[in-house]
Image 1 (cartoon, helix red, strand yellow):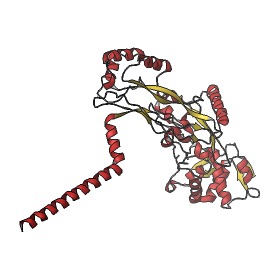
Image 2 (cartoon, rainbow, N blue to C red):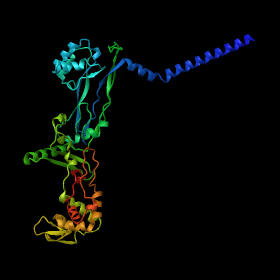
Image 3 (cartoon, rainbow, N blue to C red):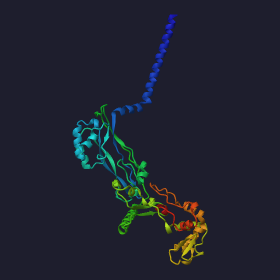
Image 4 (cartoon, one colour):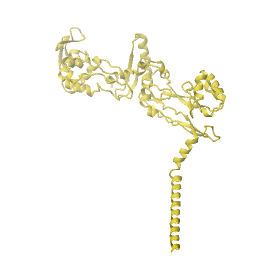
Length: 418
């Protein structure tokens, strides 16, 4: 009887050991097959370090492939404080080359961090400065490749292209609007070190950076150059506070050239005030369109069948009374009897007041809305304004009359051309 109990206990023990053995085998299998990459990466992170390599920012082209925003390869200073053997000597030598005080350099050399980017005076170094540092061959001192934005045509198209910060992040214009596309992915030089940060004698691993995506604009650089030249002539001859110009393909609505004054040098954007940097006048400035707005009223009247340009006449006495306001024609004494085609040719305000009255405020303002006034056009630039249009419930006879010939409303240049 006792032997039977002993045999039973032995069987249970063997089965238990076998079960534990199977569990261990399965666990090892799971770790080796399914968890290997994750655990290997975690282990590698404990003794590997990365020196970041900046990717090239995507280029910006005009419609014909002319480069409008490019990159220049530069180098920047990176320190591994734990690898610097003679910190005092290293601090002094670097301070002399970089033309900073010993104490300023000491803050970086003695910093308790695994990797220290020397900012800002260690960024985007001149070739001669980088060469001097490289010749020192100091432990824990590295020069890493970085990309610096350049604009081959200087101040041309400055507000539209925009500018980037010290870390190549887009801060305005196309650089900001498409920053997610233009920005690439960092690469790295991976080296290995012990727990104290001392570099191990193992081969380095190079991970290439992924450059950003290029962007092509509708801009025609030759037309843009002409616009820039004429704006410069205007500023020299008339000395206005501001000036702007737009060129659009009327068949497609594509912007071929766009610029304004004052403009700026994007490479040295920090030398300019916020207003100069942020005011892209063709999409930001608002003004009363005046007679250029009459085409909206004319289009609405024609489309509604409310006027016959050739066979219908209008008499212009030189002014028209609207409620308690007297609205004058630009020509003293008026144009007399004329067809509505001549009303358009003569840009006759009283004639357009008549067209506005025929349309009525609901219809006229519906057309104004459909033409895109009072709202953004959606151009791919930050800082676009909406302009100002009367609220319909505040439009009386005078507001209807002045709106019909482009006064009392406010539009942006981009709205007017689009």
